[in-house]
Length: 596
Image (cartoon, rainbow, N blue to C red):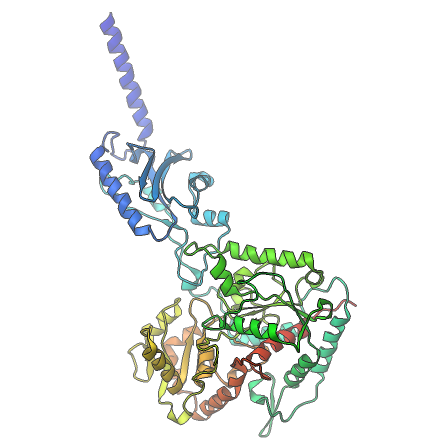
């Protein structure tokens, strides 16, 4: 009797065991529950160590998908490898698991958040949305998530069925490494400027001010200024809407009269709020020097600056986008949310402390920022302010007619920002075209693919070696070339545009959606060539087809426009400081909306 009961219980257990396994392995993967022994787990542990060594610099979270029936034995719920942990958690109703490799630091995403997405599987877009991240850094990055797709070797811990492998998302390619989805060429930018001059989009002020009427009166004077036939300080062909009659150019009256009214009328209040180094601490050397030089010269100025905000036509928010990155950005995090939040808090503070920002919604406030991230950092909370930006990309919110395209100037000497100024005369420039630089973005790779080592007249190189000799070679090439190629990098702007003007080389700008500096007043056709990105394969034919007479005029235009792109320790009339301030004033004059 006892033997029968024992056999009955044994048979019942066997049946239950087989039923249980049929539930665990519904698709017949061919892996038995006992197939992963200690020796195989050691192999898995080695794979994890290799994986950690590959991603140790990213500090992100890596997701590996697998079916539950592919992972049949695990000594511990959590395996530690140096500063990383591997967790296997069952999620969803379809019995799937996610193996999550996490860096044990505050920068990693919590495992719980990854697992709470719809259907138990988290996607890149879901996670980025949860963290409110923007992946368009100015440096190439691969995000905080990398999803790995593994093959299915025998006895592989992370083997999965075909449906799971097919659904694994790929790493998203960065925007700065892809061509733009839309293109706005220079001809369309001209039409946009005309439309926005005709009708203001600025918000009406919440209450009227006599200062608004002063700006409106200045607009009337500019529009009805008499024609100027001669101007000792301005070269008429450089400016928009200059009209020619016989052999004489008539200067657009708007420019000279507007500048004169700026000097006579404009008053600027500079907010004292904000602490160093982000506020009131200019950087005067290097790639981001433009915002620093403007800040320094503006804060030292006594002609335009007033201490009483009630007397100001414009309000300056003196922060440095470069110092904002240096102070707050977590290296390799690819998360700039805290930078934008910092400027939002600053805007909220001055809105609560002063009444002027809320009166116009920020339309009479301006900022000057020379950093690739500035359009993102100033979005929404500074949306209606006048933004003087180096990254003047119409696809990133740059508003033609309101915002100002700031020249990106590479300053090599603070004491003498005009060091090495000038170049050879036209007849001594024997190099047709020159470019050398880093392979930032997608466009420069296309340029080198078509022209590097392809033609002796086209001196197209990649990165030049570091050192003084290499730097001087770069400068001498620009001084000796007829045309200097200025392709976009990660963003639309490039310091080579101003460098070309600095060394009196005609710039060839190749950057769709790029608004050239001082676009509202300067006619860039008078001293540069602006080509579409699609024209790169035909670049030499375009350059050699330019008549010699036109090239001489372009060279003359470069030498005459040069003074508008120079910094001085003590500002001069029509120099880069005054041209920047004038464009801010000019755009405000033509965008003002008055409450009557």
